[in-house]
Structure formats: structure tokens, C-alpha cells
Length: 315
Image 1 (cartoon, one colour):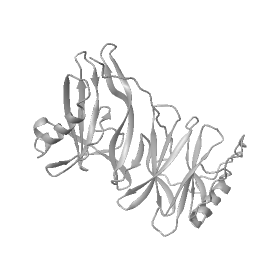
Image 2 (cartoon, one colour):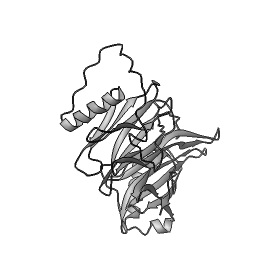
Image 3 (cartoon, rainbow, N blue to C red):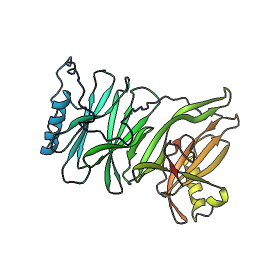
Image 4 (cartoon, one colour):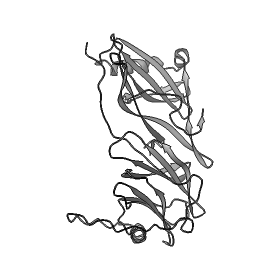
């Protein structure tokens, strides 16, 4: 019988952020003295000027203040006052680090709002819409590594504040409007012969904005009897077993994790006769006593749990 297990490697992420709950302004944190970026060894193609004149104006202002070209940026009306603001990422003096700058709509304030420690060489920005309010997730990661951290910024009375600071994982907003926190581990497979956990995994949990911070939707683990109360529970199991029809296993073990935001994650672990285990789960939606799983999601490697974050948990 072929083994279920394969050792793989992957990339991951790391963030160091702003001071939680502390407003960052030009008076509180002035622009650092930075040396000019090193000259490139070859002439790159010129970067296109943004079509939006406000975006072009803010981008020029923040690059003048920082003395550096922004590697990526977002421009939007963050606080709903009708004026756009800009957040941009640029390299720091350490070539393996970076900084996040903020520029207000009138360009009177351009300042650093997040700094990275050395060796955190990649940073991305993600716009989150939480109950009609725009926030900015700062996801930093290393080019090679296994750890991830994020911060979430908002604008309050013209001041940038941190709603979640230096938390493990990185955050994305889905097309369905969910805010998903992805966390990493090595828990995708168990190799019995060597008593080893193998396979790098990236697992998704769900977070939401509550008052002045972010919290996690905790999962309640259902019994088999509780799961069977869904009208089409048997249909979901049939769909999963059809999806796994080409996998080589001797026993399939189910667990069920129900979140109050309408998400059910179904853990489906494949056991073989040598004691090896392949861990993975499916994500479906639920409403009332019905499950929504057409089409069935991919089986994601890893072990689901009631909570995957260090945020406060709400069940």
C-alpha cells in the first residue's frame, strides 16, 4: 500500500507592528533619517503614474518624505471623510527590512506607522471592510521561513491607531466578505515509523471587528449525533468520500467544528494500516439546519481546532 505521507516545504510570514492602541502621528513619531536607496545595477522600467490624481499626489508626497520609492501601496478613504489617504511600504536602511508609511489627505502628515525588525523582507497591505468601516491589515513575512504576524490599522480622528498588534498569522478578506486569519504549522501528516509530524500547513480561522479590537469566531466541536441533525449531513459525507475515492487509506475519521459566523469545518483524517495519518479538513457553510457545499471545497491539509489565534475568542 502506498504511503499517504509526503514531506513538503513552503513559504511563510513574519510581522512586527505598531504599538497596540497607540495613535501614531507626525508629532508622536517623526520621519526617520534614512539613507538613499542603493542605485540599481540595471535600469528598471519606469513605474507607471497612478491614473487617480489624488493617489499620484499622495504617492509623490510620501516618497518625497521618506526618500524612497514605495514597493507597494494602497490609497482609499479610510475614515469616510471624503478625502483619500495612502499607506505605502518601502525598504528600510537594512536591505532585508521595510517600513510602512502613512500620508494624510492634505499631505501635511507623512510618517512611519510600522517598522520591521531585520530579516523581515516582504510586506503586503490588505484592505479589510469590517461592518462598513475600512481598516488596513499589514502582513509581513520573510522570503523563506515558517512564521507569520500581522497588525491591523484604522484612522480615528485623523490619527492612525492599531486595532490588532503583532498577532501570529496573516489576514485576508475573501470575495464572500469573510476576514480570514491564516496560521501556519507542521501538522499535515503523521509518519508512524519515525514518530514524526510532517507537512507544512496554512489553516484558516475567522476573525471580526468588535468595538475597538478584533476577535476570533471560536469553533464548537459537534458530536456525530449533533452533526447528523443537519438535514443533508449524509449528503456532505457522501460528497467528501467521493472526493477522496482515489486516496489510499483504511479508515476515515471525522470531527466537526461549528463557528457562529455560518462556517463548519469538517476534519477528515485518513489512517492507513501502518499507523500513518493524513490530516485535512473541508470548509462548508451552514444556515439553520442545512449545509451549503456545492461545489465542495478542496481538502486543506492540517488539524483544525476550536481556536487558532491569540485573539480573544467568541463562541
